[in-house]
Length: 374
Image 1 (cartoon, helix red, strand yellow):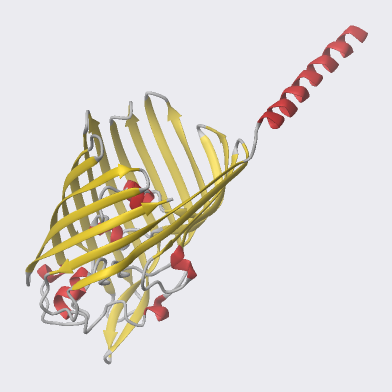
Image 2: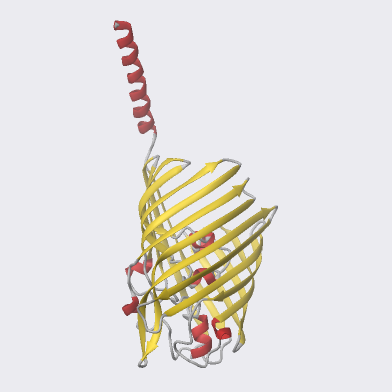
């Protein structure tokens, strides 16, 4: 009996000793980085007051802290000209406990984990100077969710990645960005110029409804990834009554698929999304169906990364503002060719030429940006 007690005591001492040793070996890790983006942009639209602009396009600050090996705190703040308030600046602020590879959970504000592009929209991580239309418009899913998240990876060479996030989100989409406040509001700029802004009185539309996302992706040895995505949540629809913009509570559901293929120095990315927003609080009942997709081919070797991209989007109900608009007026597509050059880590230059196609007019957009990282 004494031998048994001694053995148990010895085993307990070994376990406690290993835990203490592991804790002593781990040193808290802090990582701080950031970036500044300056832009020069030209938009070939005749109905704009200003078709050329130059200035600060974006400023980002990222910080992470790991007090323990399995615990991480992260915050990301991105400032763009024309932000409404601090809620648009904070894109990530969360704590995550990584139990193991298959199961992690956390709380806070997370980048919406649906479109992979949304997770690396930061300028130093994105080869393009602009994100796809379905990401920049935020009509298919919000940029960030504040609540809870569970994620993990099952398998090794052939693996399944899952992510479930639920919480509140900033209920404003079609926010402008860029030095000309053009991207994100392309359709209204084409039809109304900058005399009329679909994001007008946007302070009245700020709300934090509930929404949930689910993503399941299959990864094959890091050269093929296929994902299925879903977003369900409350939202708003915009209508126009008595010469005033009115925001009506609604329900939104979006579904998307994405595929990513990496072979040698080439990478192919594509996504397709569709969804619907509807409201019974308005008479007659308001509803909006939306659809969008993009495909891009990237060649990355060394310091230069050229790419080609095609976008299509149909995500805004304009006939609430003008009855003479046709269904084609809701559609917008664009062909982009560009390249990025990174001579060293701290500096990245991007040049893009974009050709927009719309029912009313076709026009060009040229953007040159310089990204300074620290």
